[in-house]
Image (tube, rainbow, N blue to C red; front, side):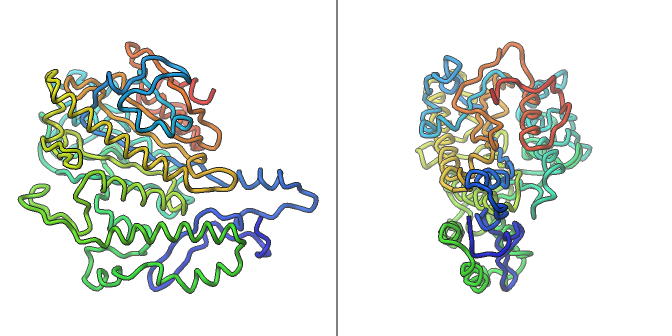
Length: 459
């Protein structure tokens, strides 16, 4: 317990200077001092109650190789499959869920267009209205329901991120508007949430006040300096009143911010040909998918650690994505090889991409595990959902979705197991969302096509 401050430090305290503002991580100085006669155990319990539950969701497009992902047995003693092996170090913090279905990803009389439906229905649990025009309609997404319930406590009710731009107008998938396959989060049935793809823009939103790298050259010049320089005076002043553990935690947090800055300041790669329909790629955009993922993962960790937001979604590629993964030697475009037609060589390529994706998730989860909060970690106080709207890109299968959850959600989630549901029953994935709402303290009786909460996640 910090003894240098006469009263608890406000959770909303910011380090400020010259248009920059940095939220603080959770510190012991923010915990109310125990009353006379209180024991250290009671103080520790009080500290644990100060950490809110947070949620981050990661969406992967184009399906995967299900046989190399799904464990053969349920329970705690399941064998890690080839695709899951990169997550071995996080087995105790990981809940593998199989057998759930996105029933509104199916055609249900609307014909082809599975990629558009997969993305648009996955987090909304609603059937997208088939149109290539402006009269789009799906449903409010589960992350935005959370944001409405808990987002008022943070600077940003939610963050929507992505690793790939996509067209927001026109016809992209068999009569479905492009916006369907490019957006996971919807603030209303007719309004998708714009995702941020450029890490520099995300950094400026989180720490630079109203700054935006695209606004003016003067702003760009400002951000060539370290944002930590602008708040140095506030940092020194506050540190004098913190205990040794809090000072160490502050130093770790600010060092992480500086590390992200250095990576953003690297020269942008040279781009040949048209990108995103002629759109020039913004500066500081990582060239490799894996580098882009890790940079966005670090930004998410900072945002969650600083309690700037408690709800984040990130799509790692648009549905039908045609990007390549040159870091692992795959130069054929993703969507094309996902339709492998049982060609062993293409199946192997898709599996290699899936392994790379799980390696990246392992990096993010490890980052969250490394951040201390009270007696536990940031991961203990949140949940991470990693999933895909298609269990098989070749056949456009919307059932038996590959679903992973990480973390403890403040004791409400019991990981370390494989929970297997009967895939033929097509239990709605919306049932899982009811559990997630409950864990976030934002309970609801129903959502989309839900039929009730899943009973095996915390027991």
